Every structure is written in structure tokens, then in C-alpha cells.
Length: 436
Image (tube, rainbow, N blue to C red; front, top):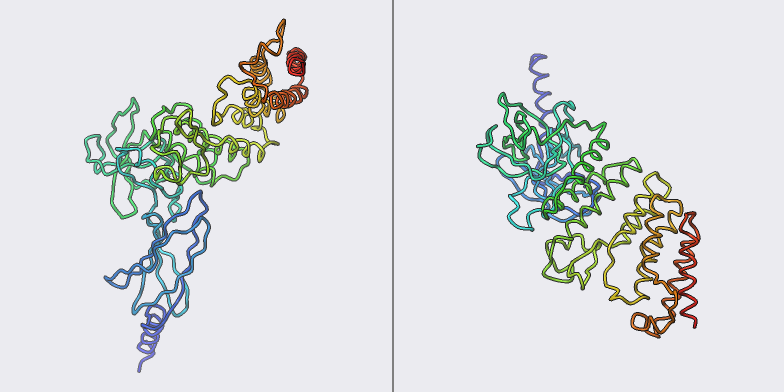
């Protein structure tokens, strides 16, 4: 046998040993879910020739490491999907129990036109970057809300779906023609969906994206969208989800904090317009995923973002440059229930909002506004007796009212402001009236 022929046979044997898998041979593959704010369904397909088999389809938590055993008779490919989006494709070498990565298609969410409120609440994958990491000039981030995808680079092209704010895509081609939409003149960009389908999107609703500068890009986009967003349910919800995803990817403390703040504010704006048919978020399929973020206010007939979410954000960032803004936003959040004009409830409400701000930021930018709010809440006692307040201050609530006033007094004492002494005297005068 010739040397060349011998080497050829050896080569075939080696190749077969790497790629062929007998029916009883079992290997393992490992997939780690990305860190995010929500659980996702991991679906795994094993492909042998023309045959496909679902070997896994379960819900998993963010960051969870999933190990699967596989077997097959020939060269197998494994495809991993998160919430129906192809995230990775691998070829498997079972005997050696190794994994060879193949280029993955860019992963990004494509949603149906939002005909009802249910549309924007369908969970989407995190902000995804193509696995091949092309040059920054080939990557763009979506700057519009629910941007239309079309089959041709034209406004008259057939719609193929929508793509969400903040999604990062790889650009395959730029159109020769330009269109003007919303007073923006731009060419169209061709990209590829997870299933390999080509589609075009209007370039005016995108901007260049660089992974190295992603936090700066995310924060700038979030600020812009928050500043000009309307009260449309879908728009507010999409901004909320983008800020949520972007914050989960950010490391810089102040960038992350501001993105988390905008996330809460956008969700609150969404809730201010949304009317649930039930009073328990867990029973509303449209919002149950975020039930721990909200509380139902019966008088308003609506859900509010829990104020403690804002205060928790402040506590985690109270030593940063953004701390004063965080505290003031927290103080401005609506609380469930109503005072009905009763003074003990009014005093308690002021302590839970602006009083708490004064304790947190006694030298803050909004001290004057907080003091004004307290001044307006405490009645003037000049020439008046306790009986004059009996309709707003039942006898059994006097102790609670006094306690809240003393707490407010402690908060006001901490600040240095021209109105400080005036308000302290006003509080002391009302406490004296209550002690009559």
C-alpha cells in the first residue's frame, strides 16, 4: 500500500472518529442563560441529517447553567432558542465530548403589530449582539419604538413585523435609494432575522452601535426616548423594557442607576394609563410578570409602582452624584390610599414623602420645595383652638397626628434654609394645640 493511500485511510478514520456517533454513545452540552431580569424558555433542537428532535423545552432562571445529555448516529447539530429566538448553533463531537461553535445568526426580537395591550407585554430576549462581533460600522441600534420591518427597501414594501427599541442588529446591506419618514431622510438597511429571512428597516430609526461604547449609547438613547415619549401604552412599555435590559448590561454605577430610574419612571407612566380588569397583578396575564414591582390603589382604580422600589434604588446609590435626583423622584411617587382630608393622614403622607427626602438629602437641591409642601400641609393655628380642627382630627387620631408632626419636625431640623425656623414654629404651634 502506498504511503499516500495509507495517510488517506488514516485521515478518513480520524475524521470518522471525530464526527460519527454511535447509537449508544452519549455526550453532554452546556448552555448558560444570559443574566437578565426575567426567566426564559430554553428550547434545544438536535439535528441529525434531515431529522430534528426537541430534546429540551423548559423555563429557566437568568444565569442558570443547563447541562443536557445527547446521543446520535451521525454528525449532529444542536440549536439553542430562548423564547423562540435562535441564540446559538453548535456542532457536536460526541466521543471527545467537545463542542465546536458555528456562527450564530443575529438574535433580536420581532413582534407582531401591537393591536392590543397584550402585544407590548410579550417577553423579548435581552439586547443581543451578534456572536460573530462584526465591525462597529456594521452594527446599529434601533432608536424608534416598534420600527416596521419590510421585504423591500421602500415605504410601500410589505410589512414583515416590528422590531423593538434598543435592539442591536448587524447590517448586511445599504440601499441605493433614500426615503423620508417623519422628516428624516435616510437609506434602508438590510438585516437577517433569526430564521434566516432577509428584511429591510428604515435607517432613520437607527444609529451606529459599538459594543465598546454601549453604556454611553444606551443612556443617551434612554434619556432621549424618555424626554419625548408620549403616554401611549405600547411606547411607555417598550421604553421600560429597553431601560430594564440596558441596565442589566451596564457596569458603571451612575449609568446603571440612571437607567434603573428611567426604567421605574417609564413603568409608572405605563401604569398611569393602563387599567387592569382585576385588582391583583398576579391575576392579570398582561402584567403578572412584574407583580412584585407594583401595588394596587383602590381609590385611583389603578396600579402604582411601589415607592420602596425608588427608595431602594436611592439607598444603593446614595453616595453617587445622582443621589439627590433619586431621592426626589422617590419622594414624588404616589402612595396607595387617600387622606380624605384627615390631618393625621396628611401629616403621615408628608413624612413618607418629602419628610423622608429631607432626612436623606438635608442639603439637596429640592429642600425649598419640600419645606413648602410641609408648610402647606400644617394648618395655621393663629386665633384657633383644638375644637376648630375636630372635623379633620378625630380624638382617636390625635396621638398619631402628634407623632407624625414630631417626625416632620426632626426632618426639618436637619436642613439649613431660610424658611426652616418659620416652619418649625408652625409645627410647634400645632403640637401645642393638640396638647390642650
